[in-house]
Length: 80
Image (cartoon, rainbow, N blue to C red):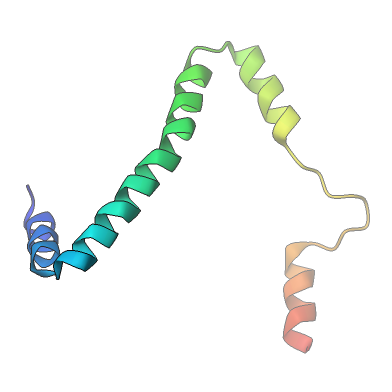
């Protein structure tokens, strides 16, 4: 383990037990939320290029004509 990881683990061990439990719960929740994403990545790894391209096109978003660009929106926001 790297020194940074060891320092983090030591800090966690020094926390009061209630805080450690909260941290463990947060880590478990983050891991649980990550699983569907990982499963989707494995499914996509088995797709053909045509299927991947179709998936990208299906999930892409094109703003309607006349929508200001992000730079214009930033300028408008700064003027307020």
